[in-house]
Amino acid sequence: RRRHTRYIGDWSSDVCSSDLDGSIGDFHRPLTSRGINDSINLSKYIKNNGIYVDHIYSSPSYRTRETLDYIADSITTSNTKITFKEGIYSCTDNYLIDLIRSCSEADKKIMFVGHNPALHLVFEQLSQLKINKYPTCSFSGFLLSTNWDKITPEKCKLKLSVKPKDLINEN
Image 1 (tube, rainbow, N blue to C red):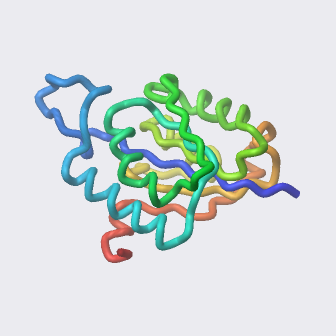
Image 2 (cartoon, rainbow, N blue to C red):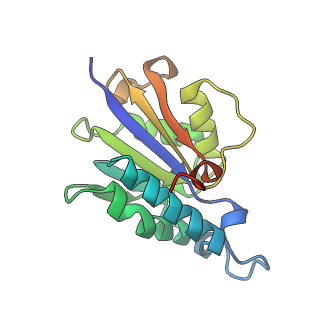
């Protein structure tokens, strides 16, 4: 049986992006100081736990790029590929599931950096758990017992799920 780990992360809610007056526009909003701090804490968690990925698929929004700047050294190797996909910015959960199904089998560990509500819905679908909120800067990993193109909730096991408040005393 093949086992793949899929990590998902979300850094997109209004709480972690500035521009409260709306003058910049959603796509171009930067992280707030809280978002920066959460990204730094997540980076430490990733590094302390030896987590790395083969391929990162990210929304091209400014704040997701900023987040990647903070965590990239912790989660990537010299062979990690990073792909910015315009479709992740305002996608549905079905778009992300289809994207997972299209991933190369050469990539054993993949990560998505995107936005709610899509990541929240994908988390619920794959974990088969109903949650009130998938907080900004959450990080989750699933162990798969199948190839990417055959992903179903029954073939996924939630391996880890951390939220920013879990990381306050972790580092």
